[in-house]
Amino acid sequence: CESYPAVVDACLESGWELNAHSYEQIPMHKLEDQPAVIEKSLAVIAKHAGYRPRGWFGPGLTQTYDTLDHLAAAGVEYIGDWVLDDEPVTVKTTSKPVVALPYNFEIHDIVMMALQHHPSEVLHTRAMDHFECLYDEGAERPKVMAVA
Image (cartoon, rainbow, N blue to C red; front, top):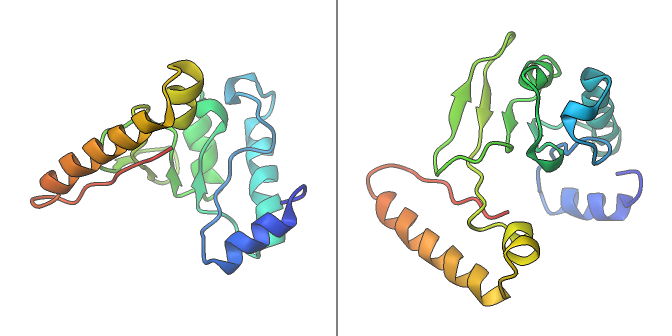
């Protein structure tokens, strides 16, 4: 929001929901004061967007045993940091429940391109295979396809 306000404005104009991704790309377990960083992240977005974000996608999918409690206390309602299959789950915290959204590494650009060194066609093939599977399973129960 501070570095690229025009991008954030374009997202807001498109009706996208903003979520927080921490203030700096420092793993949560290396922060001295997680609640302060969480609050700063949410406040910066609120200042620019006019509302506090409801969601959190932490830096590098990192957490400590206390991170969810800090996030819930700050008003975060959902996270995208847990590698889950295809359905959201509700997680208990010390204050209020938080929903963990599905996330995966099978259709993840950094994992596939930077770590596994696949060409872009593999991303397309995996995404289509995953979609077809979830589409079939979705006939009986709703599914979520996460593409990172």
